[in-house]
Length: 347
Image (tube, rainbow, N blue to C red; front, side, top):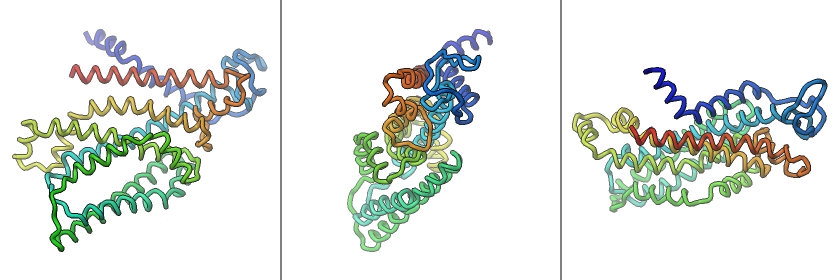
């Protein structure tokens, strides 16, 4: 019986296992950047010193196989980290909007103004002034980049909350109150952000920063792509928060954060995982597109390989082979996401 269940699991989840196997292969054969050891732009199945290069070489004499493995490791690694970051940000914002913030509806004009000022000042001090720290951290490894991004996010949230509290204090002192739904304001703001063309916005922000670092590009992708996760989290929590088990937990005196962490979050995570799985594919496409456009200079990812092949149409394998690898990875992620959705529907 266990053997049959294992065979069913392998058969149903083969896209996920295949994707994980490919990612493992990129770490095995693409752990370090390939060196230029062969003649330039050799076609596939070329013989060099008794060694068969099944995928040929790049324009600078690197093994195409190792270049694809290294580019795939970099693109997939950064995409997974970016997806995790935007997923965490979206869950926090969506949870705060729909449940953690409480049911307060009365807000004054100074609190609104203070929040807007704090939002823009927090973004300026957290990300614009600290962009060089983030760029320097990108040269030291993924862990340092995530640390700097977390520090920028804490600074951003701290300034925004400070100005919001100051505005609330002024409203209380001056007795300015009006019927204003804070949740509706944030919902309107998120819908506006969600309607913006993400790729064009990233290109514009990259031009403003005048940097072409992978760390900055991934940070921009995360900061412009978390809105859908936030809206999804809000919708799922609004569906769950009026159910009897949530009301029972509230009547027992548990805090909102405890109910969110202990009851709401485990019930909504399967649906969020489905969207995150599909988001990984969109982030990979965004990174590859920006690399193809030449906006990423410090990483030899899949987009960089495709960009290098653009001025050399007489050597078609330079673009076709990385493109095939990218298509296979995206198809596996898409099918795995659909399987995860079906699994969640069965549950």
